[in-house]
Image 1 (cartoon, rainbow, N blue to C red):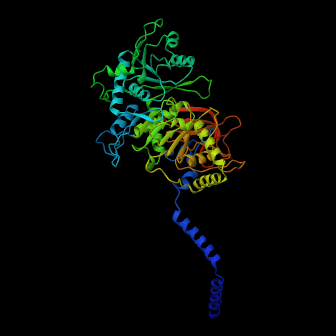
Image 2: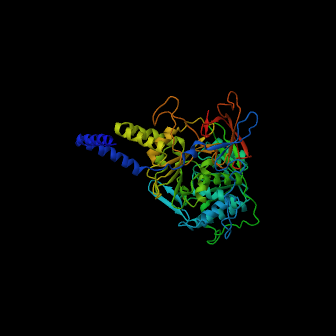
Image 3: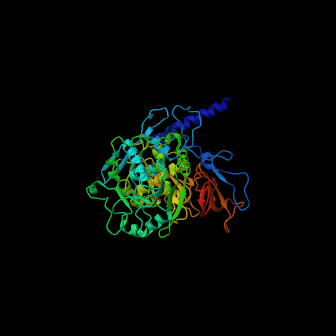
Length: 563
């Protein structure tokens, strides 16, 4: 024992006998590194196990098909998310509410937050962005009055099927709700389409009424080629109010009743239309018809959604956000994609139901440029953007970063840190800057995909989380969507660093859908995994089931990807 202690004493004495300034420096750096790692260490935003297996396959599958995949939030044995759980005033918070319909979305928007908390009773705002530095706020009471008066006017004039041909605007949303409250069928037409396409869509939808803006709707040509049109409502801007828009041009016939949105509102008594119609004794809102175009030049596919389809899509989007990150009156939501796209429409209705402020920019949907889409005030905290706009932002921003070795190195380190640690830095807890971007791939459109490396770059470049969805013609909202806390970057077989090639996927099915893969040619479900044509079912699907016409597969984490 004495010999052992003597050897230990000699070792310690020898160590400190060789101590010098360099040893002190190395020790300080090492201790500082360990201290920094310990102090700054954070748990991942979500448990890695939740990302490792994001969907569940059914225990039994049919011949020629894969197992049926469902998200963790709607496992097998439980119903898919079909409703908004709307509760009547005074009902117990433990009681089950009804599924609701489109009318409940607007009723919730004007009622304000119902849950107990700091936001109780607060409502969002509705804004129209004009130019680069002006935003007009519309009071919810005024929009309610417009919903009632426009809907009543169209119904009194014998309207039945109302085509809405408008850019993103308050009037588009108000007309949609007017149809829901006054038992009219809404037909949402893609804006800024060729005349032949507009006439074709009017014929196929059998619309008898059109709500549109002067200068964008070819009135003379439509009336001559579509004699079934009976009613036209012009939405006139401020600079054109002095003109007489009620006159029918000579040679077009007098069968069309022409009026203006502003005259309908202003000529009504001041107190008219302030109260929404009672839900008692009213039928469910009629179907909503939309047109889906996968590729430019193709004829649009006409799809009829029930109000229940849209409500289910809204419910799935509400569930997709973690409780602490859900939309609230502190958020400003900007749809920078056309509201004729059902994914964008469902997200906008979700924002209204969540009492978030919604900003409409008529040029945003036509611009594949985030700088143009977000120009104006106020700054959005939640943005719906097209993949094309995000890819353009990615390309331009990365070109500037790659010009400097230091910037390029720091950017790659940030991307890698987020992907590996699972922690998103500097969250916008004060909701004063962009915190979430929602975007979607259109099934069968053959557009460039947003790979995981591109999404990783964009998270660093924008400072916002990104959710990437797969959408289809007959699905209200999303078919599948990446998880809110999924920041992982997967490199392709060819390798590549952040910003290079990597895999692309669309996350698990949302809580209103379930997905299976039907054997298609050489793509069959086997030992190597599930693959085949993507089939989607659920309450958000028109007709409850739809084949997407694209071949997909499941990844190791049961997320959905193209083959």
